[in-house]
Image 1 (cartoon, rainbow, N blue to C red):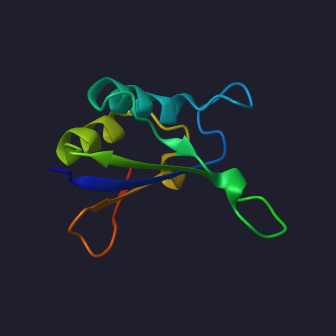
Image 2 (image 1 turned 90 degrees about the horizontal axis):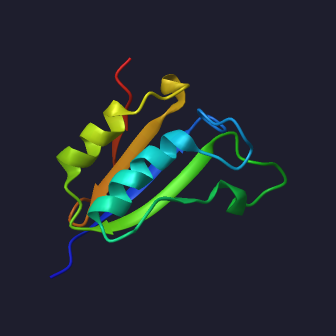
Length: 106
């Protein structure tokens, strides 16, 4: 039986990256997801936003079946975010009405 958790991750623009296409801090979470959930990963979607301007953050989304939320939160908090004050993780488990927002412990 399916049990989906929706994930939204926002970070400072290019948090921790050296090149323009690299997102090593988000990739650390992708390594966790890929290893534990059949290759599924966060997808960067901020370029899909409407309006006449670009988003002022990087935005990643995923929907993961049977996510172990405590383990994923542990992986999130282990990342050394370049701009932790700009990083938010939002999770909505299948039976939740709203997202729960997590921030980096500074």
